[in-house]
Image (tube, rainbow over all chains, first blue to last red):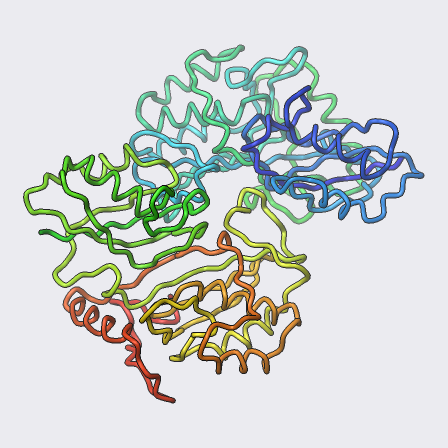
Length: 290
Length: 290
């Protein structure tokens, strides 16, 4: 078998998310339907993805991998796939993956962007399917202060839809809230990985604080919960875009995958414990540039 | 009557253009339907627009005006209108227009952007409704050389769908073709005004040159035509966005409107004639910054 890395982008509007679901149009479903056809394979293929995006969530730079038998003719696979896929999926590249590469477990970090229009935003209708509305005028400084509380290695159980046997411990490396020159409020979030619904729940909490409906004391309370908070709004999917996935140097891919697999198992969080975070996450890319 | 200036943006995808057409959804049609309703007027209103965009063309910054009887209660008109309009129109502001203002005739310039993806572009599916595809890899330097030939005061008959009694003489002030860091080819065009289908026809000519299907000699030939060229492709509407409309200082609005009305009437182009083009077009805005 040869492992292939596929880089792609999609408009999530007309997809029921990444993950294959019988009878529903999903990104994984489309790819797993078309790959065997264009390759003339008589067996199904199975994709592994870096970020399992929910229904309606977009991706500017998603990464997945697929293992194909050595003898399959993959010449011009990129062009054959582009010809059959609808125009809401764009395949960027298909390359033989380096030794040890795993789209999901080798990843060092994922970066998401959440876009909001409030009363102070200039709304550009052509962008509306990638932006969520919020009432009032958000206090961006208060949101950033709250965001700073969330950073670091911690149990994000309060923000996660529970999944059996999956840990909710994550390292949130960066949360930067900024209002751009058009008044749009963009939040960039970088973590080793995000649990299910985590970004949209974190955004719900930040918006509540930005609207002065909640204060920092409430957020501190939420952070102590060991299960999902009942009073956090999950923000709409359309505001969310997966923007980038970072991998280590080729020589570290296998070790990183092994490390990730260990950390995703239920882990007891040791108070004050420090996960090993190299200052330079990916070759030449520094955390502050993510 | 009081004249109101309305600044707005729209996603052209689901509109049959700006201009009212019976039985079809148009931007003007929507506004002329809703304005009397939210104002409780028993007479129809009529809008005048800066840029009559075609079906499928977008506007990030369109300007129109409407005359309303003095006694109409326009308080919170902005909010009332926003509440009823679909989310593919965004009303940015409604303000009492200064003396002499005419959305169409007072305008000094219009700026459009045309976006293209070719084989060298990274395609972002969420943006696909605002970008047109082109085959091959465009030679941007050749397109810019051709664009430079088009600049100035000239008869653009070759690029215009004829309209009875309307001149096709325009001053094309700026045509800048650039490939951005994602490989998208953006062309910015600024003119005093554009005749019908002009931007999309100019783009068709530039793309033919960028694909090396046509040369500069052909374009020079086209420029001598006094009627529409038969061998220019009109590029798709979705790549086109009206980005800005410029007006002179309030004190010059009426004079500018008078001057425009004269120039739009059939005019014989005097070879080498120079239209008066102030270096500074709008208060503080210089041509090279448009």
